[in-house]
Image (cartoon, rainbow, N blue to C red; front, side):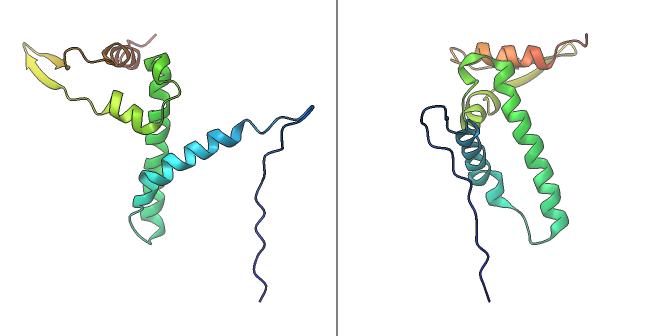
Length: 127
């Protein structure tokens, strides 16, 4: 029985008139983020369960990658773990008073301006 031969796409070496593929580093980073994160926890051997999990992974990944675009420049090229640590997993306290909801964020928090820009852009009134 012959084993299948795997063909891996190699980037074109740099030289006169040739550039390496610009997508290669980006794709490796995206795959590494997904494999180290949610893809390591596929729930079962059942197709439907894994299909639902992969759909949730795709939605969460796209939202995580869209957040730094709205938040500002420092997080634009950050990895998913950094985005989660700086913008998503925020230690805040939610209070209600007189039918108003208030979020109390940490004082002297270095990413508060980026988080506030993301929040106001995501919750802006419809145009």
